[in-house]
Amino acid sequence: MNRIAILISGRGSNMQSLVRAVATDFNNTYKGACVSVVISNEPDAAGLAFAESAGIATHAVDHRKFPEREAHEQALIDIIDSNADIVLLAGYMRILSKLFVERYKGRLLNIHPSLLPAYPGLDTHQRAINAHDSNAGASVHFVIPALDAGPVIIQAQVPVQQGDDSTTLAVRVLDKEHIIYPMALRWLLDGTIQLDEATDGTHFCLFHDQRLTEPLQLDNVLNNEFPQNLQP
Ligand code: GRF
Image 1 (cartoon, rainbow, N blue to C red):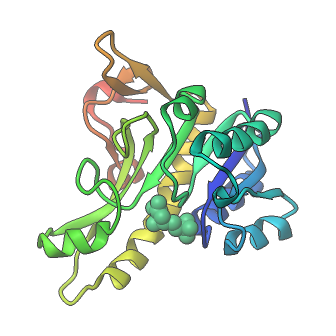
Image 2 (cartoon, rainbow, N blue to C red; image 1 turned 120 degrees about the vertical axis):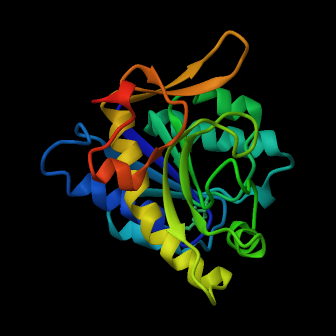
């Protein structure tokens, strides 16, 4: 389980950080994983050019060319299933059906630019500014059918500064995104994290086989501080 498909819709900076992390894995922390394919629903996505230049197979699968969502997703599935075991959403701007999400259960991650559960959906930075939040941030989570509602693995907090607008805030959040997404990927590859589902259907992230009751925080992880029951 070490071939990775990354789905993008645009710039692809998170995809680039993931590709770089895996490609420069001199200590084998990514367990020999490789990014085997990058797929965009937007044919003009800037990220495709980077992936091509890195020697990665790319596919533009324009959703507008399909009569309905299911047919578009089936085209994605055909590519993913013959190329990859893990699917990472990195700025992929289409909502995925339950069928798609359940097919890749436990091996499908997303990065979202807010401190989930705050601000699922779009315009996250502006919403944090409007609410006068002291911290914005980003979350990496397992994907479940409900939008931006899967169990969060790790978050990075970014203080909102006086005079921030959504652009300046987004730049600082993005820096942190590029750290936490490769980190979560590494944990997925080496089995440190897993998706767990309780009998009532609630989803949890297991970290070293223990349920996370709240997301890990980047600053704590960097200081090697983990909740008491989760000492690695
Ligand atoms: C990132 O902020 C990500 O969190 C969100 O969309 C943006 C994509 O940026 N889902 P990029 O394409 O990875 O540069």
